[in-house]
Length: 304
Image (cartoon, rainbow, N blue to C red; front, top):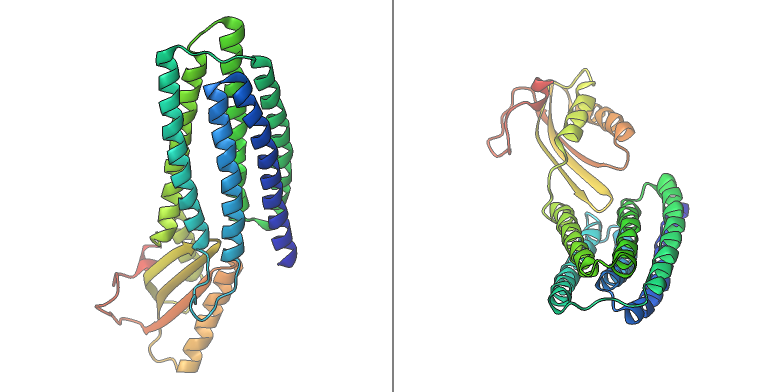
């Protein structure tokens, strides 16, 4: 576990280092070229830096053990960090779109395309190296936070290609509106990314149920135990990198408490093998018992 934590931290620090390098270069490029597309790339890279810092903080807090005030852990710190990023990305996208429209109306054009293109190429090389390290870490640790960061940096390759295209079309082909057009496109792309990130974060904060396919696989695993007569009131949720499940199992009502406890342990062992890391809470019911307070009194295993 300590090795995984060290690898995750190394990937987070690597993304911070790359973002710092690229922010410095792109600040120079923006002032040298006056390009709106380059400004959009700078905004995205700045957000990458903030996102990496927030991811590092979120992963660190989420990894803290349960305590007296947080009995379900600190996993939602990752979702809170994501919502913070969404706010920043949305503000950046609106500002960039406003600048692009103004540039289009004013007819302003970028200068010194060569410098901006060189910076974008260097940015792509640094990003490719970072992605390679992140892929290695993800294979080793299966970290959700690093996987999300990896997806974000993958999109930076396309972003830098867009900047190169905007500068080249404006300076070498003579298409005057190329730079604000690509700047506006980048703003829309940032807005779409913010929307997607917000949906994932909201799902965790609102304790959204697992996807139906995973719930079905969970039910099928439970059904393999021969003593189980039914299952109902299945509730699932995810908090950071931790999953929680609780449900009622119907068993032979003539069993002793000790016998029922053995059955619950056996079911839990089956589930732990197929769903490692999931925290499970099982309530045994005598077969045929119906609790009117349950979310659903129907026998879910009857559908299998």
